[in-house]
Amino acid sequence: MGLKQIYHGSKEHQQMVALRLEILRKPLGLSFSPEELAIEKNDILIGAFDEEEMTGCCILTKINENNVKLRQMAVLKNMQGKGIGETIIQFAENIARDKGYITLTMNARDTALGFYEKYDYKIEGEGFLEVNIPHHMMKKNLR
Ligand SMILES: CC(C)(COP(=O)(O)OP(=O)(O)OC[C@H]1O[C@@H](n2cnc3c(N)ncnc32)[C@H](O)[C@@H]1OP(=O)(O)O)[C@@H](O)C(=O)NCCC(=O)NCCS
Image (cartoon, rainbow, N blue to C red; front, side, top):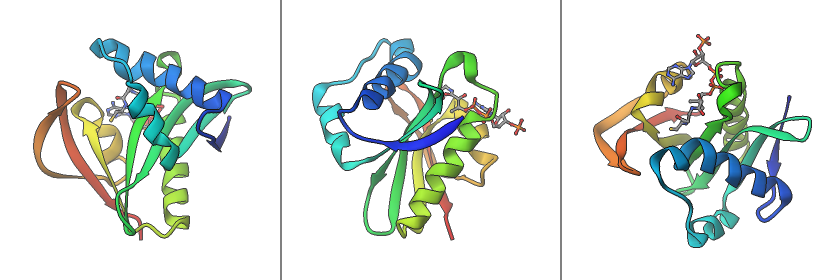
């Protein structure tokens, strides 16, 4: 398996949008707006690949000089539970550190809190709804 940063608008970006649609949005009856995808031009896009197939992904969005946000973390359904998510989050953290960020935050689905807790993310504040499902903000100091 290989991990790499991918370019906005590339073939890999199309694969990523398809994966996110399948894993994160369709089960909730949702899709992506063109505006939502266009604004990702400013983000760091990360994909995990098995040969040509994208098996997982995530996005890093700059919040400010010190803080970056992890979004859209997803692994193909039939590939979950095989360590791909762990590899992706470690790769994303290394990129964030290299770019000088101090903290990584995210709005985590409550169903994934246990996954992020394994990698030292801590819940901050009360729960809230996003895309109509329960979430908590989580945070990790990268230093
Ligand atoms: C959550 C997700 C990204 C994790 O990726 P994954 O490749 O399945 O996870 P890994 O196989 O790397 O698991 C690493 C560890 O976390 C655990 N884990 C994985 N998913 C978990 C979850 N939802 N809750 C609690 N623990 C979890 C695994 O059991 C494993 O533990 P171990 O090291 O003790 O064996 C993936 O399951 C997924 O895409 N889920 C659906 C979409 C989603 O919820 N995305 C996150 C939105 S915030």
